[in-house]
Image (cartoon, rainbow, N blue to C red; front, side, top):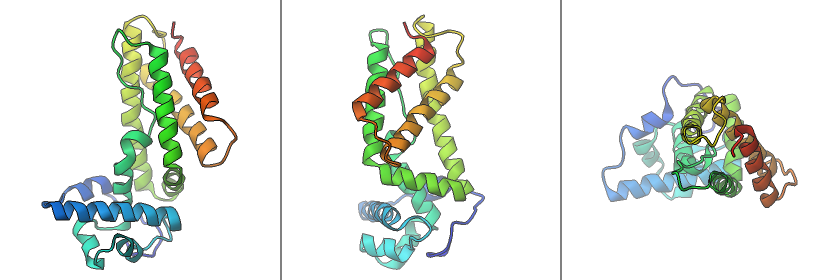
Amino acid sequence: MPSSGAATRRTTDPAKDSAKHPPRTARGARTRAALVSAARAVFERDGYIEARLADITAEAKVAAGSFYTYFASKEEVFAAVLESVQEEMVHPQVRRMIDSDDPLAVIEASNRAYLLAYRRNAKLMRLLDQVSAVDENVQALRRARGQAFAERNAQSIRDLQARGIADAEVDPYLAATALSAMVSRMAYGTFVLGDPWKLDDLVTALTRLWANALRIN
């Protein structure tokens, strides 16, 4: 992709492309990490469309040609930026529960951790929403990661159903997808759009809605 051009469509997964040749040396790993950090700063400052590869390498303080040692395009380095925060950011995740866990306490802690992480990464989340609307490859990447996180939450719901704690008639994956989407969109409205919800109020309400939807008893 040209360094200053608009997003283009690709037929491959940028995350897979950029992972084919990981750095073989500590110095290479540091250079790649610097490029990812610099890319995030430039994307958040200038937006995805206006961000230039020359600005990313300048921010990282590396030679312009070094970029292509690690990434083939702007799209690939954007995928790497997402990869660096995906576990905490791309989808709310409720951890697996054991029999001694209080389900409501686990869901509350998970919602709070996700909302705090979203607040820390609000600029990137705004950018992800914008890029997904114009780049179908990033959209597919976002969807795939969201599905992976939803499946993790679905397993937690299955565990609760097996223990007789959650509604056995609810489809675990569908419920996980819908409830995670609810939390994610409320986070977007609050921390990106500026809706005036307080963090504690959000956590309380979202946790109660999870509990009500699953009929946790």
